[in-house]
Image (cartoon, rainbow over the protein chains, first blue to last red):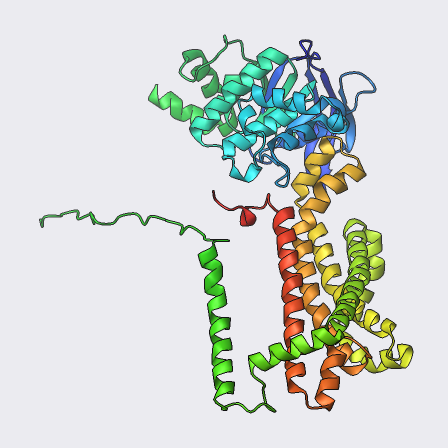
Length: 257
Length: 279
């Protein structure tokens, strides 16, 4: 077991622009994420938050501006890992072979299987290593996907609403698992979510994107582990939600006060 | 005001979706499948024994078995069956190989698809058996004629299903593999090929059907050996028992090929939910 995990990679995005046809998704966006930070990107559907994540993770190339990850010659496919909304496990590979996928070019190395078992152990699924993905529950599949993302000790973990399709209880379990893994390994984490409460539970910092630009950038200085019931968290959530939903809701809150 | 009683149907129970346990591979289940053919066989034998069916019209099962034994002893049956089997396999390997290669090429490369696919689709619309007169002119009744026809016949089901399978691989999985740094070779071996496999097996099983059909026609029209030739010779001498035997041999070879493919499919697709037997 390697005790030295690579430190997180800083992310720098400058004047990022991306359009699909006539549809401008990102317009001149700047973002700096220091190494090891857990950032949540929130916003309405279609605001460009997933596109931003895809550009950072190297899944797509920007039309304008640039995005850099860690050092000059660092390639996203080596040091960044993505967790998608769907587990995207290979149905024809058993659980452990799905995890070794995460080792990339090093998958065939001799210690590959040992590392995969270790990663599975970290998400609590070491005993399911030999099974087909089709027999796992949705939450278990997403945990295998997490193990696959973690097995190469990434410097950046990009999370594209990975908990969106899970039921409420499994979601909370996964949030706790994500937090504990991040606290231990200290990679840089960028979480795209539409769930403000989830962002507050997990992130150091919340970035709100509207119409392809950052319109709110707040630090979350709450002690961990965070619980939904904390009044500070509730106040912050109300603030961000008010901003997200527009002013009508703020007035409605004022009437009740 | 009238009393309003809210009468909720207390018995509105939610239907319980109870999936019947699927039986597969149990001996009892297999036995049921054999009951009907065995009964028909018994009926046939009975009808022939009491003379309802004349020997020159349809010989009894026992007569067919006797013919099989006779021809096995002379070596005629094994020789012809072996020849037919080799022809089938050769045609399948050649036609299926080309179909598989072109299906892969056209599924992976837009350029290759644009260049060849519309031509192939045009050729596909010609029934390959319509080429028999031309094939006889080209190759006579030599082995090439049968090989050509069988290969042409199996080419299309293999080609189309390979293409469909490669095209149908989940783009989300391909994106995932790319983001995990897969090179082209690994992407093909670990994502595209296994993803296309279920469709490939569909193509192979279709191809087997076309293979036997083509071979039967080709052997009865243009051959000097093989099961089809044996049947045509027997017809000349009114040996109806041998004719029936030939038909049964074709059925047996077809069934064997299909069973072998299914076993192979079950092995290769054991990850697929459709092939997972609940313990």
